[in-house]
Length: 530
Image (cartoon, rainbow, N blue to C red; front, side, top):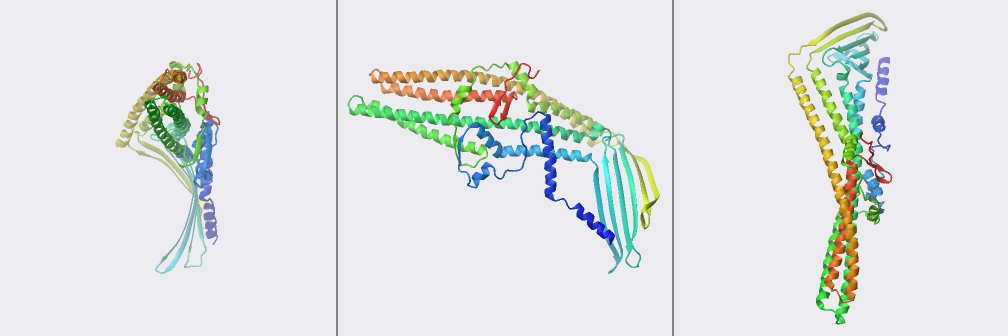
């Protein structure tokens, strides 16, 4: 009876941890690993969790609790996107899983506990004649040298059900070890899975931070392009208004007999064409707005308006001189690009895997030893017999084709990793060169278009005065207004292109940062990347 009670208590104890407890344990370990690696890599200190927020904005919109977001500026758009984007959530989960993998590899080197309980009744025919039970508990430990040490204790109880004899109990306790001497021996070989898991988590932290920055750049690009389209709509709407006023003026002059029907038709024709272009621009803006809404993780149809001061703010804050040399930009990019640092270190991983694969070409030679003590029958705490043994086993390396192929494959992958690193460096150099060219070109284009807008405005003013004085006709004013509309749209496009080209350059130099104000661009210094 005592055995049955003990077995029940052990079973209850073993099952007292709920699935939710295991989940909390996994999260605690994984989050702590992510936090510590981010600290080690000097990443921004920000809360990290993969738990979905049931009260986040997109869910409140779907529940009908929010219908209007009001005016949206870039910092608010970035905040919404990071909290609601499906892609952003997937990247966080990928980082979490890398940390979870590391917890498993660390566990392999921890003291591992095991326990078993078994009970049986045996008999012949329809009659039971014997009952028995076994309980065991073990501890095992893997060491960096490859040695495995196992300690265990067991208890067996049994009794005959055909006699009045009580329970007979026998216990034993033992200790055994195995130490590889050839293949599988040595800390660098044994700890390789743990080493790689540690490095994989570092890579995942870098990948996540690089994603955050490229994601912010993508959201900013969509936001600015949306603002550009909104500005085109405003320009087109103003153009329609001006043409409507011109049509009214010409109609009054025709009715007064001071202007021909031809000039009225010209104004009216341009007014209708501009009105149609306004409809197209408004439809294009509505489509881009829906695409932008989806890209930041919100349901289509929620009311939002862009901050109309965004274009003016860009123009006021845009630098008129890039001031970054190709040599400085390239040096900074190669020293700081998170994805490039990972590529370089993955080449080191490939070199290490060659050594591991080469180790497996050896034969397997293990030294084994064990010692075990047994108790007297019916006295489980009194050990009076001891048995021990020591020896070795050796598997001759006669057939090593799988190991040979793995080793050769590791060498090939090492060479491929070296080429990948070289290619990544060349691509960064080419990207930086292109970024600098684009920034310079777009800056010059924006400055040209600013002058074009000023010239078009003066042309319209002059043409109107000449029109009133009878020294110009309607066609001259229509052409001037078309020129102004084109110059305004081109100036906005050039400003957006320059802004994004500059942001792309800083992103490629890994000098783009995120904070509560949105995006910051850190200026490179001469000593950066040295």
